[in-house]
Length: 460
Ligand code: ADP
Ligand code: MG
Image 1: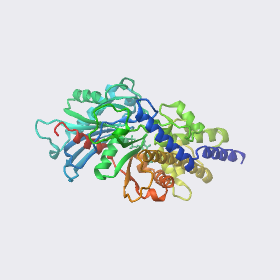
Image 2 (image 1 turned 30 degrees about the vertical axis):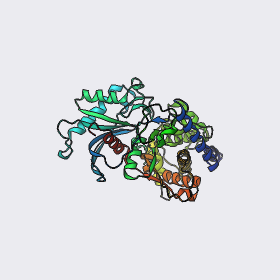
Image 3 (image 1 turned 90 degrees about the vertical axis):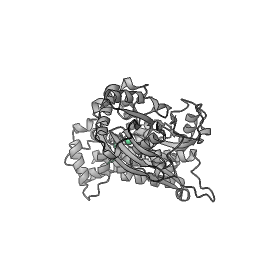
């Protein structure tokens, strides 16, 4: 019983350290707004890169023609083909294929990665049906969604700042990813023009806007996390380029890199931070890390409180064995004897003979970690709404504000997404929350890239 008490103590302490009362979240949101201003004021002015996307016009619905898109996220990449009908006809036809990235290519060479991508794209193109054939003499056009920090130099060029999400390919850093992709396509004999290079947040914003005029920001909750929003061009002091015709500019925040002394960090977060590349905010919020945080807590419980018996289960020592989809399955277990938790512990961690109260404790851990992540994501969104002046009710105005959300974590982890919405309501208050809509923009990032390729087409 002393050991059980010790294990419970570890969980309690962890829960306290993970606490996110509204007062704390408001400080986080304010800090986010401050950093946004600083990142817009000067290059390198903040941890938030606030990258200028060169997208100053979002889709209108008039886009027309056949376009390809390539969406390179963290785990998978997708190739898409869409036929846009023009003037309110919407998307006439769309097709996609998902391909996973061999792990060895994630830490190899630039040519290795881009050759693989170009080869898969080429395979996909060769299967195009009659209805997708382009007029003779025209080149196929592609929107490239690349979900890593890129310093854009135009709508279709930009240099990789650094890798995230487990990618680490040294010779690609600092290079123009469109040049790399174009060279690889040439090597494959694939004749295609990259018309737009977009971050997944920017793609999601574009895709969201195409179907809903009130979309003004987007958030990705997948392997990693990031956000984009529509800024007034005048509010971007660091922008010295060609003035935006629309008076607006989409900003890719790269908010995964956000830091603040108000973040509820624990010893497990510090240890995880020391062991890997990416920064705190992303690690507390996104899919790549949530399961890993739980593994670390369970490991300590096993070691210090013999939670799983006299020896530490060997699997528990393996970093990242407990993945977020498994965590979410355990968290959502509705069976009275927590059968799913039992099976996951067996299958993933090779731990059998767990008692019901042990399994309950594990569900509690899932809840603590998911709740902290979802509430911090909500605080980040509040930061954006504040920056845009959409966090207060305006008398007589019936302005709607829609934030487009996408990513595997948001889509599949319903406890997480529910908590995010509830927290946003808690922070904004019932009245303001009536005008705020958080919507799932399914696959917006790929379609958005195709839409932006259309509005920046060679044949406009
Ligand atoms: P990417 O971020 O690589 O573009 P996705 O948006 O598809 O990819 O998100 C994939 C991530 O979503 C996975 O790495 C995982 O963390 C998370 N995820 C996928 N399925 C689930 C699930 N059932 N429950 C919780 N998280 C999930
Ligand atoms: Mg993605």
